[in-house]
Length: 538
Ligand SMILES: [Zn+2]
Ligand SMILES: [Zn+2]
Image (tube, rainbow, N blue to C red; front, top):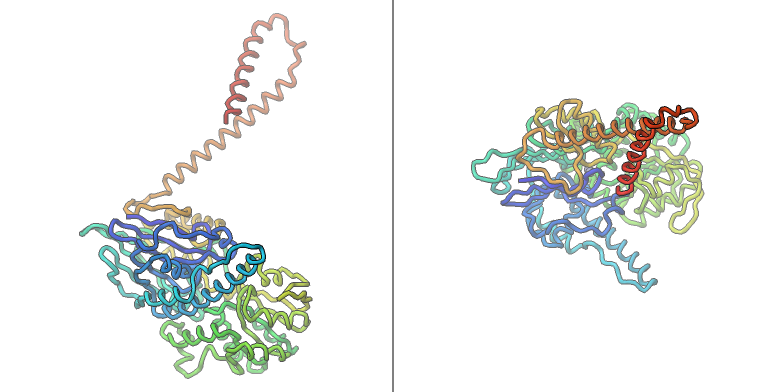
């Protein structure tokens, strides 16, 4: 029985792992590659036959974990997709959105190809595959051990990252009566503050742990500092009658912001904020799902809901559904508009930016990561002119970046979570850029764990006891270090020899010493010949 690493190894997106025994093959997550990872993996299909997969365990709805499941179905997967109740609802929204984006991109590429005399481009999957995939969802409750199939028990635990997000515990065995090996999949973990979600669960037992490392080498700003930054922009904008545009992801970040705006109004009743709009049909649907799963929300939010207050509906707030309503907002000089996409690579935020970037009283607040090449990144980088929908737009608006609203654990949170495991646990550090993953792996080793960053396609024998790869890895590392030291020594010796040879003046050698010197010089010559010929062969 083994674990196969098929994605998110040394990269943030494209989570995909396989548990394989002689009796079954089960996937944990099956996500899209996004941003720069997307180009690297363009056109890649599965390295396994989707029809052979017996089930999928899904940690949470985010597309980098769930996005390729409809493609899996299109290519023959017929098993069940196990995830929490809230996730079953969120994936419905996200997969339909993906299907729309894939269709639009394919149409756009087809038009371009047509002009070049090339073939039409088909989307990876469409609404039909999404519908079939939705039929396969199998909701599971949190905290209950479930027998998924012979030799596989699972338990979903709170991950505190987005609504419905889970850490998945698995107990794997191959033969009857065999002691199960326990593998824990962290999925994405939330931050310690757990502002709108419940905090993540701590798990005390595991043989192997796959831990995410998005922020494995960084610390977030404190909650107080983040709120202070946000409040300052709001106060300034309120005083000056500015328009505030907030490009945001519609799952989780938008709800967090609505809550922060509600809190602001409660804390500063003297400041009159302009009208607030959530301009996204997807955002509206997602917010409704958040309000429905009260039991999954943080204690602070539950308290508000019990009192009859809605944490996601600040005063003077409107959900914007139709494109006409959205266009109407262009006429307003003062407003707070939350719209997708989070990186300004599409969606309704585009037309808001087009109509307001040239005005000096516009404030743009970035609350999430802006990938290289996106309009969002260009604005954050301070470009003074950008091209939007074929038009050059002068940028006079003020750009604000507030990084502290992340839904991810930072380095301290990750290490605290990891410390809950016994020292025999072996950590596989995934879901992070190499620098971040390496840094977290080193910190875990300092805590006394065995930890490594697996490579794409790596297979881990689940029966192997600690220390696993570390030993061979550290052996290889120390052998490398020895070789490096020897090389430096040799290089120094060679330099010395060259220096000496250059300073030797044959005229200063005594006649009586010729007989002694000649054989020595001949052997030096032979030595250099051997060295250079072996170098040439290399
Ligand atoms: Zn996520
Ligand atoms: Zn993720």
